Length: 632
Image (cartoon, rainbow, N blue to C red; front, side):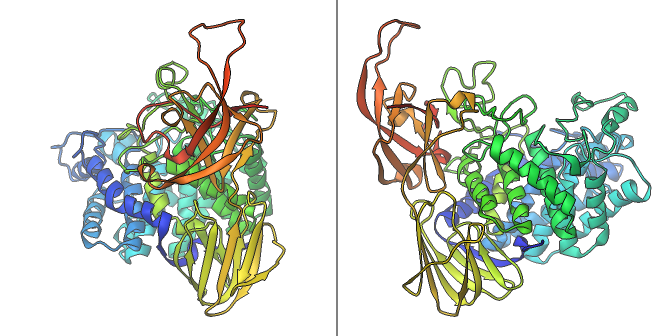
């Protein structure tokens, strides 16, 4: 059953589109975010100072300003370190490495003698440790710091943080396994992190602990209710009986529908799929498959966004996918990529890589402004200034990106994801290299295969692989590419794909050329999605396009696309970072000041201009819409 381990790609040196984004993360996003973490900008995080204050508290020094921020503030620093680790692998930087080492020293000093590490409880109330798993995020923060430790060790060979987190995981193992403390994480994350730690160190307690948290989840659906009854305090008043919100209503192997907080859900599903891959647990695989289908076939936006309601940042019900009130948190799409990558370890199929790519090129990239200095937490598919960000029902759907957030999970999450894209773009097993996404650059696999990918994807659809050291190569054919051609050393070949992948034997010096379909295409939603009846979306390759007012006389609401109308590809726009616009035949309706009228609206032909969804909101506040009205 186990097909591969994607995390085993030895090295990737990006070029082209991916390199541009990785350099943006390295040169702009990482320094900016560190200034925020240290309260050196207009936005305050206090995350670094929290670790300093925790170290003081442990030494008995009361000369500090206490804890500031969310209960999970530690995780922002952890994700920053992880992003740094991947950045150092891409672009070695002694000064950045020194800065990370200094932060790791600060974090190490904040660890208690027994291995416990969490600034909120160390500073605020040591006696409350492990008594509020529902809201406390202790395990969540440990999970992110474990991921950071693994990444930093792999990038630099330095094991100080790794030792800290091994000690922390042993403490958690003692509490929950050896001593039998009841409960499981309110916010899943540590499950997938422990499996990374197991692969990195071989420590079997990490595997056992991950399996424990996954196996025990939902066995007692009243656990959080009982936990709450035992304490007289709360962090923010979570409903302990909302089992859907925290994925605690049933054992994981019985789950069928993606419910509750979207980020928590896909983090949990990622851990489940990873464990299923390691242990070849067929029952767990079946559950993961049902949950995957629930998301991608009934509860996912065309952009790869998930979580349709701001109430609980959550999944709602099947086919409830409103565009203007969509939540579609950036972190949720990142988590969906995690889940997809782990499903690929179980079964090599383009349906997983297609969704991974869909989420990345649309919602994940939309989460970062083109200059790397502002961020979206929420990713709606339609914004109207004056309503979006203003109406009580639309306050979460901002028209412009923000510099930072009080709950700042998304910016550092996007930074670590983009910096580590090789983990998702390429994979391998003992004798085969898998090309899941078309990322230009030089790739070395641990199985010995070496090659260079040349492409200007996602705006050019010619992909060339120059093989330095041969072997077996598996290349994904996206579902959206209705036609494609494949050549080896300029000779056309025809190979039937297996679950969307073509498998080739390549030798040293070979050149493999893949040409995908570059035709813009109209996309229609199921009639079961009520808001999308009579609507159409425009896509090209992996990119979903949207229409902004700035390109369409300030008004996209009056524009309807012509059914089967001509769509043209325009030149790259330097003001949008080289993004390629599309031009479509359309009809404009003359505006009127009357709220209602019995007069037939005046229509006239026009041309509508669309931009890639990930670029929207970079030219000031204006209207934006993905799903357009269609006219015959």
